[in-house]
Amino acid sequence: MSHAYESSDAPTLGEQMRKERKSQGKTLQTVADACEISVSFLSQIERDQAQPSVATLHRLAEYLGHPLSGFFDGASITDRHQATEDHAVIVRSDRRLTVTFPGSGIRNELLTPDLKRAIQFIWVVIPPGEGTGDEPLVHEGEECGVVIQGQVEIWIGEDQREILGPGDSIYQKSTIPHRSRNIGDEDAIIVTAITPPSL
Image (cartoon, rainbow, N blue to C red; front, side, top):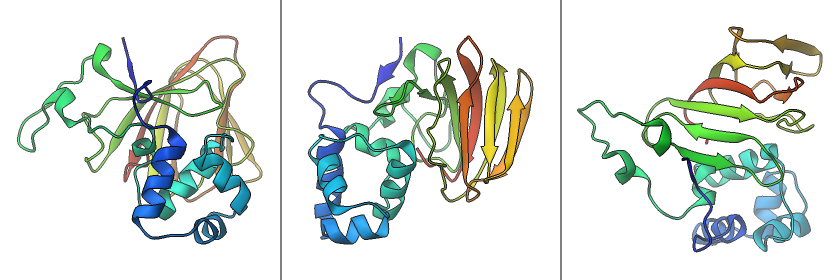
């Protein structure tokens, strides 16, 4: 069984975002301008009246210097695997921390023990027809992924479209706009490594 970030007693995405913004003394206007969204849309996100795209969430998290996954749960996850700096840490498949984004059926299961490592491995499950959205993702770092199951359409930049199947892999600089979508009729599974971590 996976453990989702969101739970009934955990602060909502909007509450977490508002708390982080206010703790930094930033106004709605400042954050909205920096992330290229309207003040009213940011206000709606913070009041849980609007669901931002994955790309918008990435921009907000990056601007606020906050791990993206930190908006989904106020609790630390380090105890889950008793991680220490000088020992190997086993992450059992039924103990993976799972992050799902609002409005998306994509499930991101963390394969690394916590969010404090130099690299992040993620088991990504994309249902048929689902994807990261029409707005491309752009963030710092590099990433590499290998398709385990299914057929995935990947867009790199505006013009490069690739179809990846089982065993196919992709490496890219994360600063290049990119998006993906499952074009098959079964769940697509991708194992992705990202450095520095962006979830």
